[in-house]
Image 1 (cartoon, rainbow, N blue to C red):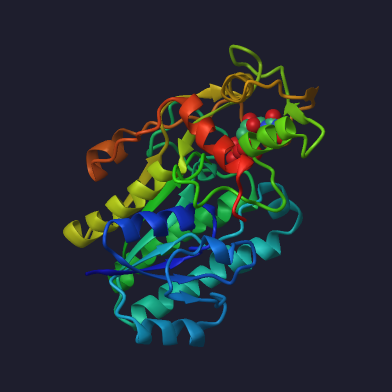
Image 2 (tube, rainbow, N blue to C red):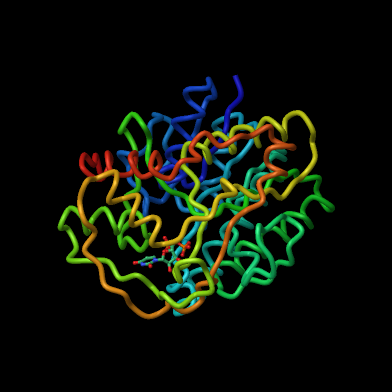
Amino acid sequence: MKTILVAGGAGYIGSHTVKYLLKNNYNVVVVDNLSYGHKEAVLTSNFEQIDLADKEALDKIFKKYKIDAVIHFAAFTYVGESVSQPQKYYWNNVVNTINLLDVMIENDVKNIVFSSTCATYGNPQYTPIDENHPQSPINPYGKTKLMMEQIMADYETAYGLKYVALRYFNAAGCDKDGDLGESHAPETHLIPLILKAIKGEIPQISVFGTDYDTLDGTCIRDYIHVEDLADAHMLAVEKLFKDEQSYCINLGTGIGKSVKEIIKSAEKVTGKKVPLVYGERRAGDPAKLYASNKKAKEILGWNPKYTDIDEIIKTAWAWEQNKKF
Ligand code: UDP
């Protein structure tokens, strides 16, 4: 049985991936500092509450367990905050990840799956976005992720590190069994905010811009179910065990949905109206982002199961009504 160390395994995508790995007979060790994650979301007893800044503690964990591969989710992800507090993002997302890579190399662990993002592309020059699209991030968050892709490439040359950088589009939805879900504080993402507005937990949502060059004037994004992301991470680890080669791969459904379409779907799923106002554009939001997922299908043999936005929102609504944390 292979052992996977999941850094950030108490977070949204990390916790779903841990559950998926356990179901598929992997031994899983979670490290998380719980700065944003939830202890209740960790479904393995192998849990170590440490910060990746603490190299010594990290080294002890690599000596305690025989780790075959690492999946690294631990990062700060608020784009707006990364603009106002870049220091926080460079220290955590870059410096602490270098710590993790160094401890891996020192302990002869050479396989890592890394959470990257479509934010590394910046303003798209064309859609769908494939992996050859130029990478020119427009905020510090996207820059930290691009830097890590580049650093991992250098570690491959120097130390033989093998990595799969998974560039996610918009993660959405929740565990279909209701054990896990999306629980950010603060919440900034469209789908959970819409569902909170429907519940009356917040007064309304604001639609950020209605004058974009899209069919209905609102922004288009590619919403990918968190269980499909979990599946892709497991396939990526298995690819590393087989191929010993590095890859950068997009993860999206390849389907673009506008903000208005998401609102319509949420109203259909819940049978309730979304209280909303039409507001100004949010700084740094490109009109259209959706993925070419051809490479993920070809290289990983991955196929997203959730391609119907109503089905994705149904899982998010079930969680929103019956949250465990
Ligand atoms: N959005 C919106 N109102 C909100 C939050 C988001 O209109 O309160 C829009 C946002 O402009 C973007 C889309 O919804 O086009 C998805 O935003 P989210 O923050 O969920 O993810 P992002 O695309 O920024 O990663």
